[in-house]
Every structure is written in C-alpha cells, then in structure tokens.
Image 1 (cartoon, rainbow, N blue to C red):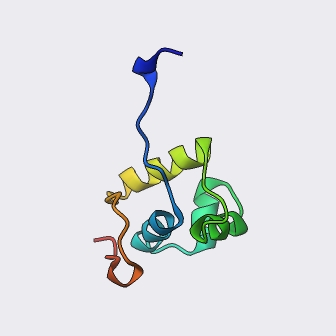
Image 2 (cartoon, rainbow, N blue to C red):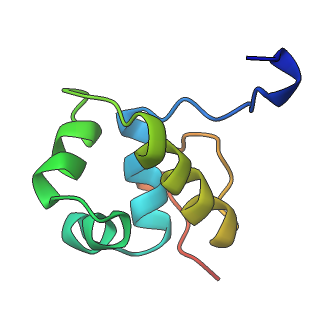
Length: 83
C-alpha cells in the first residue's frame, strides 16, 4: 500500500471515549447504538480492557467531528456539555 493514502487517526483510549460520550450527553447504550455495537463494548473500551479498532475507531472519529468534539482528553469533572 502506498504511504500517501495513510490516514492519521486519533488513538482512542478509555478516557477520550468517555469524554466524547459525556460531551455528547449520551449513555453507553446510546453511543453503542450509534456505533452499532453493544453497551458492554463501550464499557470495555472506557475501562481500558480493549481499544476500538478499524471501523469502530473511524466511526468514533466521525461522531466526534460531527459533534465538534475536541480530541484532547479532559478530566471527567471538567467535561463541557455540548453547546
């Protein structure tokens, strides 16, 4: 594969996934529904048991961009609500 087609993507970790979900004011189940996955999967990502890969990571990035979410992880006490 030619390197010019490589896409730089955020490396989603538990803290950034939880920050995105809270920013969008979604439950784990609601985010799971948007991604077409299980609530348990979201929980496992947020606790660091697993990390999203492939299509799931891409969909998280799309949801974040559409919601105008800043990709920096924010401590849970300081997560702003969507305007």
